[in-house]
Image 1: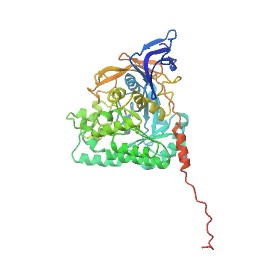
Image 2: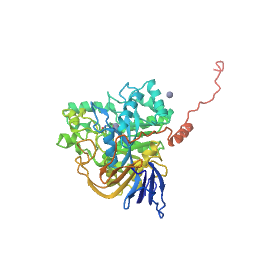
Image 3: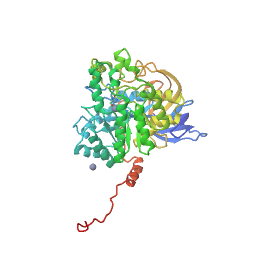
Image 4: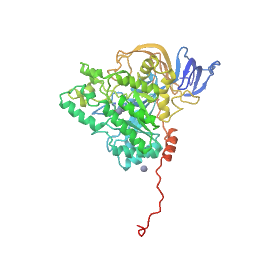
Length: 492
Ligand code: URP
Ligand code: ZN
Ligand code: ZN
Ligand code: ZN
């Protein structure tokens, strides 16, 4: 494979601007970008990609995926090779997945296990590490992960009681520790106690099918947990990142905090922007069950709010929470919705869904699309400008985007290792013509060219630039003691 590659005649789109330019890739890195009127000559032996009529953008970064996750008595069907290949087919060139230790499992052991599973990845990846329990060894392991393994984000599940749920004590301990390390706390915000109680109540009322799932996880449950996590972060003086913000209630908590100047980041899933809760009333059990994920799909009016949140910058990133379970796995909950493994597909379609429904409808500009699909995640998780940019010296993770290509999304033709698509039948315009992972063409002309093990683990150092600002604010807000001359006992 040629180590030199020239992408000629495209419109380069970054989070900052759009301009006509040629782009040269050498040895996996962006080596040169032309001015608008002077193109670049192809070095001898270079492959030339004609990007006329296309947009040339940083490859997508999906900051929330779960490849081969052991969860709810089974294992997610998509592995790190099939999942990152499907990502490449959709223009995504980096995934940040999750190490999720079982309660009492040492964090470092779980991390080592996940690193082993991920060696087959075909595009670059990194890991958030979940804190699912607490003692001094967790405190120590967080430090080791941050200092020696490039982990700068720790995940907290406020739901999944009896399994991986964190109570407030764990949240406070872990947020405090992350503050010492300059790492970012992320949260799955749902009140796990309420979910647990509502699940029993709904089931005992005779609702055993997938329609019970959203009834047990209403928006208030997410709003309460979002607000609690944000308030805990505020008091402890740490930034916080909400994963899969799905409803107005959580968005309001984020908006309030941001308007008060708190450093809160929030992610929205592509599927929550375009799919509503009517899916749970599908008379076909399998179809309904395939939409069981947490937080659940919401009534339609939440979608308008989420789009507005994204367009206004209250929500900064888009993800998929790609967590695939095939039909026989979903059927583990045939007589009890509480046993349906939670999760949906989406890594292959996030970019197209956002382009079609976001850019083509005028909700997002192409530059805003780049920001919410790539650059903002790179900045928040501190891999910018190596990722999420088209700067000289950046990794050549690039998507050449054909804005005219029409496609109907279907499980029959997708590359994801799941027998269902939540976007089945959706017609989208806009798709990758080429995807490059560190300069390798991994997708072209509708064909995957990925190879097992070519993806690399990406170290993410602590102390992202926003930490300096956070520390200054914490310094300014520090408690001070009042100096007093105490009265002597005689004076009293
Ligand atoms: O339903 C979901 N989202 N499954 C994956 C685990 C999680 O909560 O992110
Ligand atoms: Zn400490
Ligand atoms: Zn979650
Ligand atoms: Zn998740």
